Length: 281
Ligand code: NAD
Image (cartoon, rainbow, N blue to C red; front, side, top):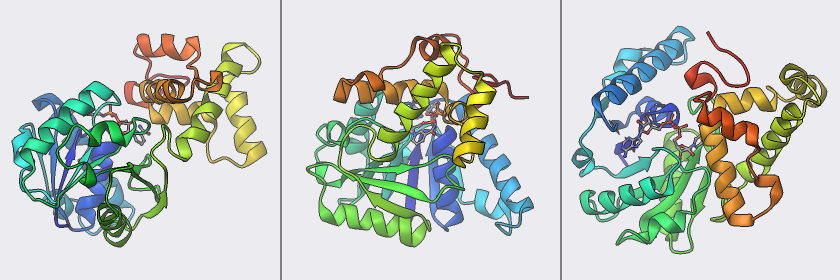
């Protein structure tokens, strides 16, 4: 697989584009409009310059030269693998997979989703090639975290799963775990209820955000506390994943607490907007 497209150049999409270009792939990033495209390019430049300064890559500009940011979805026609990383919204993803199915020409191209919680089957069945639709779920920040969850639906072929594994492990240098097609897969099914419990604890006044996070960092050796992690993930994404888990399992532990809902309504989405449980410069 040589030619890669990433649809959605936000937090995750720009990271997936970066690791793909660093692995030598020709990468197209599709964004929804010019401004979002500029923001995606800015994120890529900043991250690659940081990698160059740390000596992780020789040249940020050489990697950037392999990435094109565009707004025309039609330009993904010649891609071998397309990774969808748009907002966590089922209707939006379904609409996109219908379009990708019409546009992508290679008969064996892989149509992947980076969704955190939406069943892969819902995306596969709206295409004429559900055997080639798979979840390839990266973790944030993509250039740093090693894990990828591979999520075949009941209709995904073994060939698609194995070619996806070969791409993420052999080419991108990640490590894959295999998951069933259930909301949240392995990591978020465990992580999201933990973060929601921390939000409930903070919301009830039981402890401050700082003390909750310090507790888990100092007492359980977590690299960061659950509220700082929610800010990093994005509170909108955290809420969307919780809602998908709740829809799937109907368990109260997956229900988004009111504070999370109000913060999202207020646009306090965490690091990406400068304020969530903490304030960022
Ligand atoms: P984000 O809001 O940072 O980025 C989404 C991007 O998609 C935005 O830049 C938006 O302009 C663009 N977009 C929306 N609709 C589009 C369309 N139709 N065509 C092209 N671009 C479009 O969100 P994110 O955190 O990068 O999440 C993206 C996906 O990755 C979601 O499915 C999310 O669940 C998943 N994910 C997120 C994390 C995380 O920690 N944030 C981790 C793993 C997976």
